Image (cartoon, rainbow, N blue to C red; front, side, top):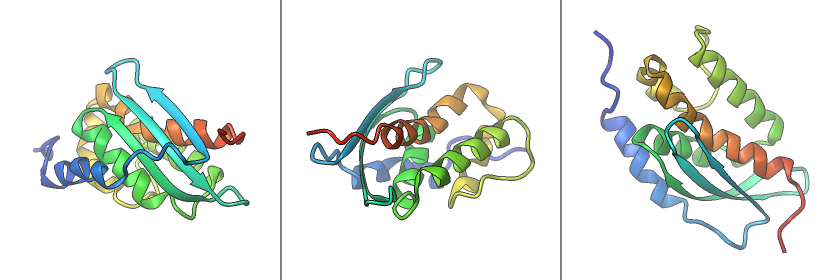
Amino acid sequence: MSAPLYNRDILSLAVATAEYLPNPQARYHASARAPLCGSRILLDLDADAEGHVTAVGMHVEACALGQAAATLLARHAPGRGIADIRAARAAIAGWFAGNDTPPDWPGFDLLAPARDYPARHGAILLPFDAALAALEDRAPRA
């Protein structure tokens, strides 16, 4: 029998998005939407001169899995650069596609039940897509 899709750990991560309030003063911003489920994220990032994330703010409109993934991104992105986030996103997508190696991003083992629900994959990848969009557009907002 597989683990329940929504469990205490996932729900705890989902509500933790409230710890990362939107930050209009952040240098980098991105908005992303998952077309299949309609999940949305508005992501605000600050980064140092080398491009390593220093702070994350966000507004998430997604299922509990999308919210949990957003919290995992926000908690563990500081100190990481675009290459790290790109590699994590690729590993997550590969894991969803059947690769047995779980992504090397802290906490993603908690989202293992979602592997069997392809309709949820877009919501889980969404925070990483938004972070990449923000960091790829390195022109700061005035």
